[in-house]
Image (cartoon, rainbow, N blue to C red; front, top):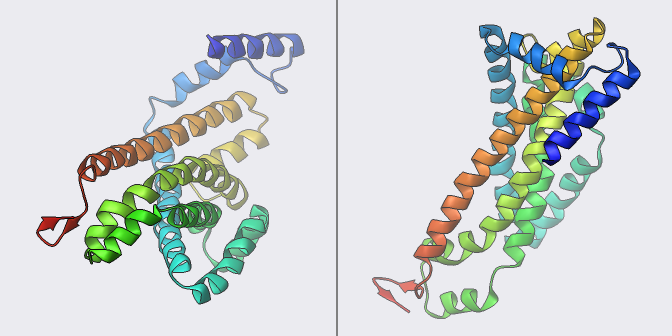
Length: 252
């Protein structure tokens, strides 16, 4: 119902403006999508951009977890890693785009930029999750000398995983926004960013909005796929950890 309302508002606004270059309605955008979607070039473009941005986010997720764990374990590493994370988070994305374009080929730009923008989110959120682990369970694991890998499965991962899920919800969207911006500036061949830039050059407003809808939908689907997988993992770990902590071959 809410979606229908906003589509109606969009259509009315387009009709009131009455100029296709300034704004087109959802009907024109849907018509343009119907022309784009059946083509092989469309799917190749979407796949190329999706693969590069997803790779950047995956790298940020892995490194963010590792740096958060290292920072929580060592005050010295926290003092070293913390300023770097703050610097990355505070630097404007356009500055990174320009610098990376100087250093590497534009084909790698979206991957690197999405990685840099998602990394501070994952690091900070997972670090907070590590600090919020149940102290009583950690003390129990230490008293009963639970092996580290068993403690990780029974205590650490279940406690931190909800924070990691929250980081993914925020990080995926940020990775897509920054990755598409990087493609619009760097113009790597055969990407969504290049298509958006071409549409802007030719004042093809319907194409701009059509590709924008594609970005929103694909980013949402990627986010939901990642979150659903992590929620399934969280459910299985919660079910497996419902009993007492295992000590060797026995339970505590």
